[in-house]
Length: 45
Image (cartoon, rainbow, N blue to C red; front, side, top):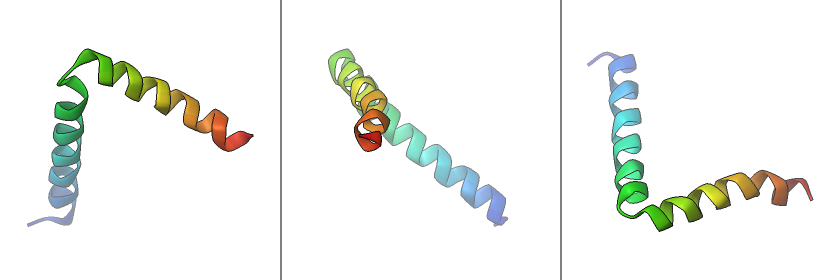
């Protein structure tokens, strides 16, 4: 298998699993977005 294809497939697997986790419920997704937005702010402090 081509290295690029393998990388591309791995990316899709990661995206699919994280999407399933995020879209299982809207509330966890909102929390996830909040955390994702706040992490750079927390790190900068």
